Image (cartoon, rainbow, N blue to C red; front, side, top):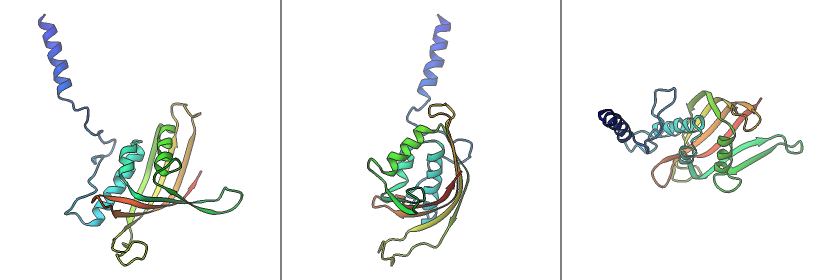
Amino acid sequence: MRRFFVISFIFLSAVYCSNPFAPPRAGRGSLAPILPQNCATCPDEVNAANVLSNFKYAYENRDIDIYENCLDHDFIFVYTDQDREGQIETVEIPRDGSSGDIYRTTGLFDAFSEIRLDTWVPARQDSEAVTTPEHPGEIWEVWLVTFYLSLRDLTGAYSYQQFEASGMALFKIRKSPDGYWRIVRWEDHSFSR
């Protein structure tokens, strides 16, 4: 009977000392997985850098909730498509909807069991000033990121597919109406292998 109480005590201690709602622990890095995107006392570039760090974390951990929080409601993803009927076309993908970026990224996270951004080198560019006609009254942080992305289906759910891409991406980040800094425009300048 005493053994039962000891085992019960250990089990209950383990259950009550864990928090099932706690955010996931960081992977191999030493940084917390979710950095603040609304630090009132931080310079704009710190909040913008935190957004990019959270973006990388979301990709590598396939966390659509953190990813979605990195995107502004007016978010646009821009890339050049060179495969459609031999023509070069600039494509703009909105944030939401059945063909939107969040829908597509959810599919990407589901299809690949391993997503790695082994190279991720953000470099701050000159900010876009409040006088810019595209966004009067707002300052946008601009960051150029050099990256190497690898996607792998290790489970075989999608025929063990693997893809790689490297290049640069231009991110424009602004303070959203709710006070959080988020990506408003992502221009992809990469090539696949």
